[in-house]
Image (cartoon, rainbow, N blue to C red):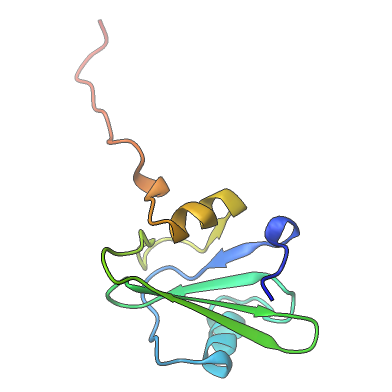
Length: 115
């Protein structure tokens, strides 16, 4: 059962994660690597090296749930390892799952002078 995410935080682990990890390994990464408690019910997102697989870990009242999505074409727009921990909104999660790169919506504009 997918939780009601409107009241939850959606935590993203930047960089790549070994997608061979399952519930115990990912819960350990949440606790030790991200400094969060995996028992809050919040969503924790992880992405693999090739950015084609996404895993979501969350606690659902009496046990962990692990949700996986693998893209057949394209890649997930994922923050680099040097990014700080990121928290997504529900809308950003929806766009991520649809493959929309909301983090790079606009190309940077540089001006030499004004006027």
